[in-house]
Length: 259
Image (cartoon, rainbow, N blue to C red; front, side):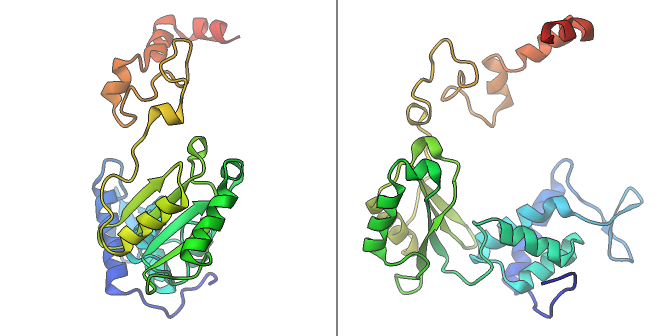
């Protein structure tokens, strides 16, 4: 894969996955909506936009979640739709470990063996998973599933961690943190049989931050008390109070406070 497109074509399902996420992203405030100009570039407010590079990661995620891997044809189609050089699209797709550029079963278990998880028993977990399910990277359950070692899942405080992903028209997932070999085996078997249900993760503040609700906390003071996606909840518990105070103080007094 270099600066030129290959002859590979995207399947109808791959094209549908890309078009669906682009339609969603372009309809959002600040999205990259526009009209196709005669030179193939996107035009917005009369000015050509030579690339929708900022949409590359969401598009790659959409392909991975729908198909289970990112084919050369899908990369070609994504490059054309986003006006991104094929080499750049390939570079991004090959950089992130959660993306696969080779065919992979729709159900995958990613077992973290990075530093934090290693200190909490990841090596023993991987050994037990291998005993139950076979070698890492080798399909099982009739080719429906695979498990592999992987890098950090961002769940260090709940180590050892694993993530189950299920590709399809409606993608699914399950976080297992802390996880056991039996957890991984059970979840991946459920997923392969189409029976994986429930939320991808249930955050337990007491596990992630055992010191939650202690009066002296600053950065972790709101853990477990507010929906991180809710601005109203954030404001209700003192969010933006410091910003409001800064406006009241004015630039000069803020500088004095800092220095």
